[in-house]
Image (cartoon, rainbow, N blue to C red):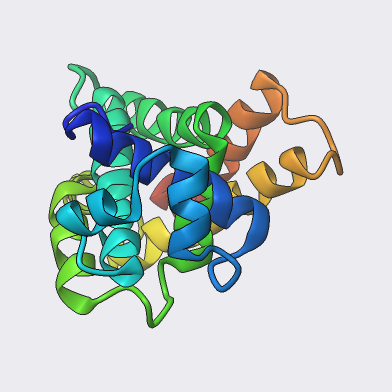
Length: 198
């Protein structure tokens, strides 16, 4: 997730992510980070002004990476319904393949440690905006009910997040069929046709 960074920065970010997921933020000191990453404290401060600076850079990096990852599905040539499925499949795939990054984003997206400018930068490079545009397109083509597309995206994301968390906690097995069924339920929940059928 951090290939665009200098190898020292990579080591710092990767180690910070691992430690935070293991020990929580408060227990992750700069001294521990230096020890675990193999990067001296002085060198850490050469790249980052503080622990808070590292956390914000980590947040931006993971959201940007997840955005590029999910856009692989959203940007493919296909119908709105196909891109809807491909996009949400990529969200689930990210959560499975990069579970530490997924866990960090879920835990710190609304944390006061994350600065507002970092959130705005992350949103610009993330996947929520292009997903919302897809929903807007679906509304304009009379496929979805008339509702705030950003709210719909968040409602559907919440459903998939809880499914992923349940899988990670071994509450149940999230099979490919279960993923497809969950995405189908999300589609049906805002589908104009499903609303008419009811």
